[in-house]
Image (cartoon, rainbow, N blue to C red; front, side, top):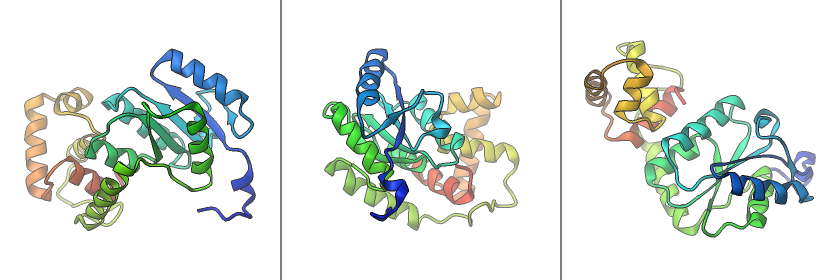
Length: 218
């Protein structure tokens, strides 16, 4: 967390806004642009933003891909405020891995709360629904306990094709999507996943995320 005397923490944060609904995008943009506590940047200026606010009806594979794209484009520097409704454990794990620092329920989030979350995120503070806090703590403890390679180190037996499948699996893609990305048949991808699961002892996708994070694939 930034200290009170840190000049960066008292500067108003620059924010980019991304919403899946054009009307929500327009309304939120008008509010944020007029608010003195934040500086609204164009949506394609994510690399210059302190905070990215992503508003989505629900968390889908496209939402997760958007979060990952922001993380990659900014080297994880830009913090993300996600405004949505229900997220499952797998989605929550991925969201945190991709840089989400605050989660607001869309049904309860006013534009003023979004501004507060952006300012808090810039100062190193998070906003999470009380129902999510316990789940997140449990998930993070589980990830810390998961066995995996030191960061950036892969088992010598893994070939590039298997690394690609593991990375895409951890990114939230399903079997058909992975097959399409890598131009393999679904049957081949299922066979690779089965072999990886058995060889690496991966129990589920959350475990795959933990392994991929430790290996530096995310």
